[in-house]
Length: 234
Image (cartoon, rainbow, N blue to C red; front, side, top):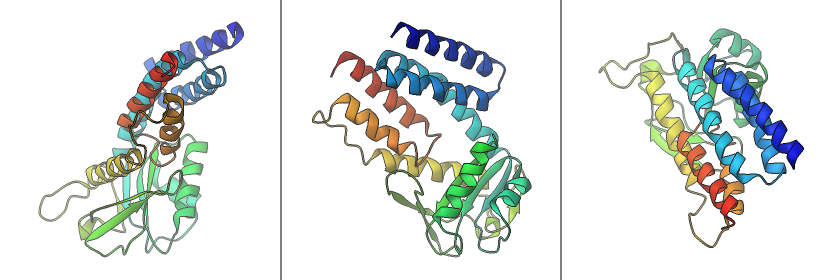
């Protein structure tokens, strides 16, 4: 256990340094390593602590992505996931038909492997409809209906800061972030906050929800609460 604690401490010291230097993706990678080590050792106090810088690193990734290129819909988009990511650099994309959830998963995986500030959602609905159903493509099967983005913002590349509707409504980036938050809330809703489930079981179920929305802030907070409960043996 002493060796594990020393390794966790080393990783978190490096993660803290990366966070100070605003190397958010490096911080995230180090936190994930520390989290795996802490969970393996059953060191739940450390798990709760690690989740704080991990949450901040992911929050920064989400905000940086939202400041980049936005694509709301891929109906007319051709090419490969790699080509899409090259076009974005950093940004947010909602994958729609004719592309399926597997394509959304591929884009996200390649973005993470390439250490890119990119966020991905999948809409399982008619791209030209008034409501879009945002659905998970990893983790628990959940979905949520939201108002569709303005028609003039759909299915085209939107440069940073652009993409407001003709009525001066919500920006494309804000629409994306709101949809992501709504999907995260739906995922958390699958985990009942009842006393019947122990803290460790609750942590595991909440952790699975991170596969739905990796960067959901409240989800990280709920995970930390569950970890502190596990540390107390409740």
